[in-house]
Image (cartoon, rainbow over all chains, first blue to last red; front, side, top):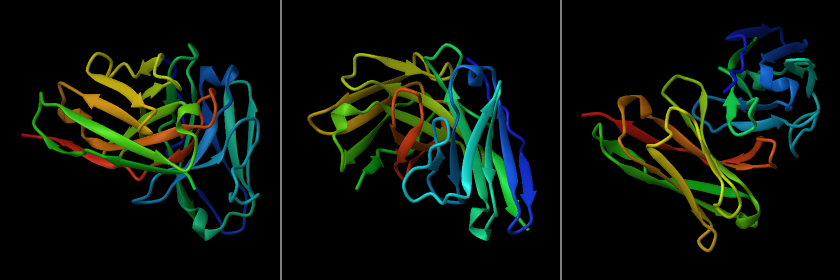
Length: 108
Length: 119
């Protein structure tokens, strides 16, 4: 099964824009989805499909994809966006689901 | 409101067994694929298994294949994870999650149940 690779940590100044990336061969065939997880809480879906936000997710969150790389962009990061972010997708066989290792976002 | 409530976690010795349950409410359970995802203490999310709407198709991560079995009871709105031959490395919080569609995104998650494998 394929792996998804994320940078372990990223930081952004309050109100600035940050991009979190996810790389993997399976992303050439399947969209990534993105999850936000705060300490002691379950993950929350923030982006899925081509660039879809579930109800209640602020529009500062957006997704994009090119080749084997998917990206989550937060435009105008807020203090409450500080969290771990995970991407996931199906692997290249389509039969398994894989997660990236996660990116810890710090808002300065 | 979609609710997923896991139960059945606890302390078990290496080589032992445990069955996790996830009770669903607030949606038509029989229409959705369901997944289990785990997270070891201080580590990232790891996909474990998934089951289709009627239980006829299942998939497993290589690390649990042959030891874990996913199943569901649509009459009880519940998905299960039978875990056998448990190892220390299976220690984790186990989440059940609802699949939004067949693409693999998980749109609702339970609060998780902790499984600790230790002697």
